[in-house]
Length: 228
Image 1 (cartoon, rainbow, N blue to C red):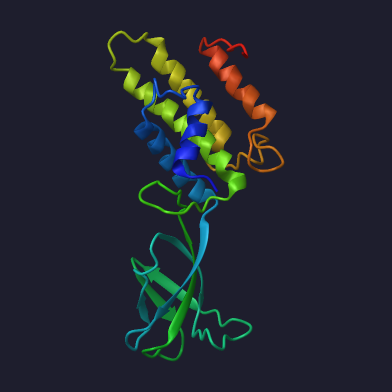
Image 2 (image 1 turned 90 degrees about the vertical axis):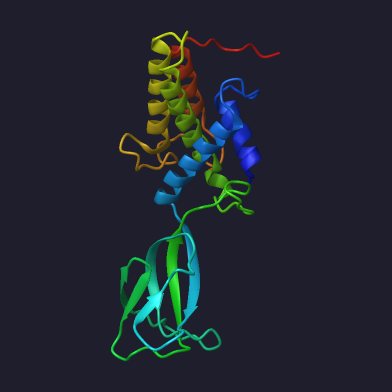
């Protein structure tokens, strides 16, 4: 799986800015962070954690489950040395960081709750993370979204820059929105793999994605660069 530096290079290639003449690395990283956030909402990381009850009672703190965005299932009581089969799934409610077990018998101190939950993905090198959890076949999805966010950022900053042609912000804004449409649809809730922008290996952009990008750049006045 790729590191932040490797994904940054891919975004720069997508923006035709390998030398960072237009976007600083910090801008690229911010675009990757935003795209990763959106990706995590569509395809979150699946995680499992256990919590040992420190006292009797149905209310359990889940503050130890870092990065949690949604609880999916709760198994209680859970014994790792002799787990029940089928699992003893229980009803629950959540308020803030307090998980309430809706069970007849009061849970006792020392018993274990096993929580299946969703959390955001990580990229090695981004925000101090040491591992990348985005599947390799989906990394290009994040790259597409990051390039769109970078273009959107440029369109905003160009509005106040002296000497910038008035149409330039509009061009970058339009390009960014169209890239975001390619990334996750007009409602920002679609999967670009299902839209045909990722090839069958699930990792690389398709000819359709390349053609789409080329058309957008052409509309902005850029001309093809001849191959050496």
